[in-house]
Length: 367
Image (cartoon, helix red, strand yellow):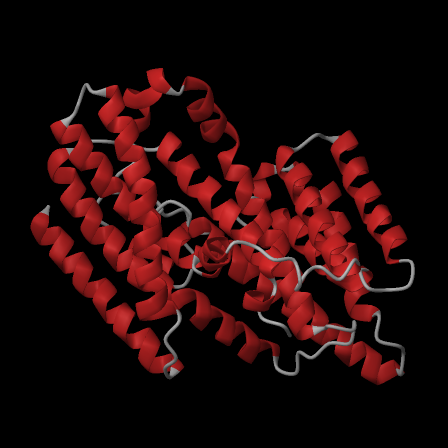
C-alpha cells in the first residue's frame, strides 16, 4: 500500500476535515463561542450545526485505505484477522490513551475556573476501563473527551471489514472462484448500512450505522483504475443519490462527495501527483493526534478566557482562534512524541495504560 504521506489528496482531505471538527467543537462546547457569538453568528451557527459532518470524510478515507492495504486488487491479504485487528487497536489506542490521560487532568484543572456541562466529571474505574477497550458507548458510559466515539467506531469498522475480507478469502480458496467475493461482501453491507441501519439512530453506537461511508471509500478504491472506472463511479454516485432520495442525510451527502473526490483522483492518476501545500499535507498526517488532543486543550483555553474575559466577545473570539492554534500545536507534539514513534506494541500499551490509572488518582485528588 502507498502510505497516506504519498497521497497528498488524502492528506489534504484529512486536514480540512480535522479543522472543521476542531472548529465544530469550539462552536459546540464551552462558553467562548456563546460570548463571541455577536461577532460571527452565521459562522458559529454553521459550524455548530454542520461541522460534525466532516467526520464522515475520515470514515470514507479509512475504507479507501483499508482496500488499498488489505485487498488492493480485490483479493484479500488478510491472513490472520485477529492479529490485524490487534495491530489496528494498538495503532489507535497508544495515542488515544495518552490523550485520555491529558483529558482527565485538563478536566480537573478546568473545573477550578469553569462550571460547564462540557467538562467531564472525574471518572470511576468502570468508566475508565470501558474507554481503554473502546466500549464506552456500547455500555452507556459518559465520554471522557469529545470525539472518542469515533475511535471506537473506527476499530469496529476495521474489525468488521477485516472479518469480511478474511471470510471472502476462505470462500475463494475453497471454491476456486475469482477474487471478487471480498468487494461483493463489502458492497452488500454498504447497501444494507445505507438503506437500513443508517436510517435508525438506535444503531449509531455500532459500525453498522457508519459502514455505508466506510464501504463507499473501499468501493471507490476498487472501481477506480478499472476499465470503465468512470461508469462504476457513476453507479456508486447513483446509489448515494437514491439513499438521499429515500431519506436526505447530510452525512451521507458528505460521504458521497468524498468518495467521488477520491475515486476521481485515483481514476485520473492525480491521487499521488496532485501537489498540495506542505502545511496542509502535514496537518493531514497529524490529524488523528490533533483530533485526540484538541478537546482537553480547548477546555483549558475556554476556562482561562472565561475566567479573565467573561463578558468580552472580541477577546473570546480571539480565544477560539488561539484554541485552534494550540490544538494543532498539541497534535503535532502528540504525533512526534507518541503516534509516530516505533516501539514494541505491549510496551507502548503498558505505559499509557499505567499513566491513565495514575491520572485518575491525581484527578480525584485535585477535585
